[in-house]
Image (cartoon, rainbow, N blue to C red; front, side, top):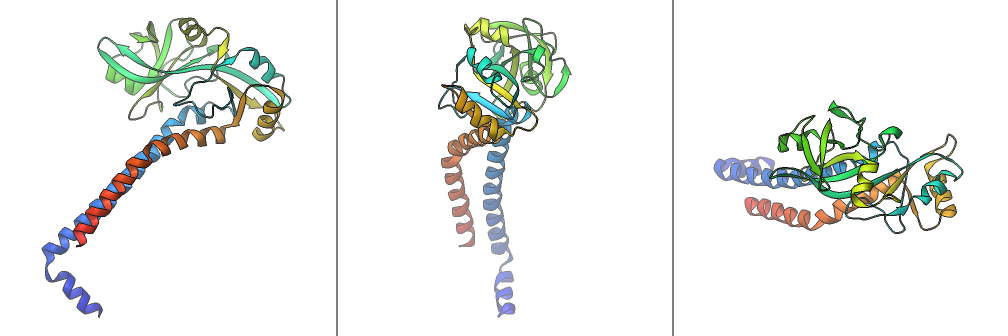
Length: 263
């Protein structure tokens, strides 16, 4: 039986080659799409996973950064800092915008952080510094290359001119990047001097992220606290939901190609 099957398979080598190639292409198409989505999920959660914060606090009902908006009164920061088990809490401001230079434009998530706190900013630099003065910015190295800028050059962020102080690594995806400016610059430009988008929290020794989340949610009204793992998982869910229909279409195409080749 095996010898007969082998004989039938290799009787017309051209047809066999076409069939094998078609099936391989269909499988490659499916695997490439899966890899693309997996890479997108890793990039979209890169900031969350690299700040070092174990707990993220947002306004009620907000469970992601991307595709979401969050605004908390700065008074909530003091309340969070007083919660048992909280070793440190720092605010950041966040929005989706673009970094531009002349006619060149790069979509970016803009993060406002306090350089004096040394947290919430870029975690890896390819050049320059993240010790920002007023009017300084850190932009992604890939985005900077596309814009044709480097340290010392001027770019436009949130409608205002900033000097590129540093270039960050691991802060770009195939659609956008992350840019960092000072918290006070961000607040002044957007009129958010009394608010924070998110509060990053570090638990004290002996307190788990789950304990801190439970205590923050119980002690501080009108906030939503999540562990880093939960927050990152919600972010990945955004990518997964956005790509579900595309993956279904591409998987169907791959299946039909394979089926046609075998037929």
